[in-house]
Length: 228
Image (cartoon, rainbow, N blue to C red; front, side, top):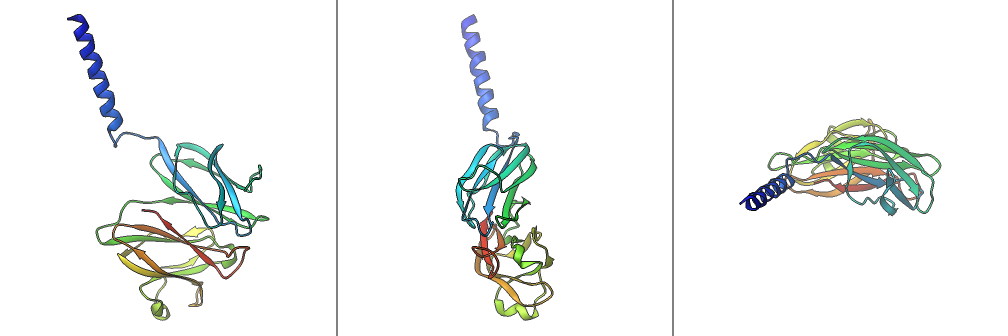
């Protein structure tokens, strides 16, 4: 009987541990980070989160999705591919259950980095969330328009005016559909980048970034990130 009692106690403990492990509401003590390579005259980069490899040989305008990382102080290190020294290092305190997007921008001679705190909570039914990022040093400040048709630009009010370099708009809420995202020289209707046919289904989230062309400067190019 004593042996049977011990067996039952052991089984109960295993069941309890299993239930705790399967509980999705339990604390994870992790955040998530993704990195976009937008240093215009660097063909590829190696990216480390502290000393852990995020991606080797990350191509221009590419990212490798979110990576789970423990909370706490984190050095996000961007290197020219195959080189052991950092082009730029961004230090961030990673908060539990929080997601971040890092852009490495500028040039090899003057590299910069910026970090955004993401909000990937789904919008209301029938709605979408869209965020624009100015990751093009050569662009200067821009106005951002999210339109159903480019022909609407002449009479439109910007969704975000005077968006500085290394900055992002708040999340813009729209009905699900297809949009054109236009970046203009701030205070004008002169487009410096037009990103057409941005199709977003209900409940989805997208980030649209303006970056420099390969080698630097204009005409600007775009990076479209699927957030959710």
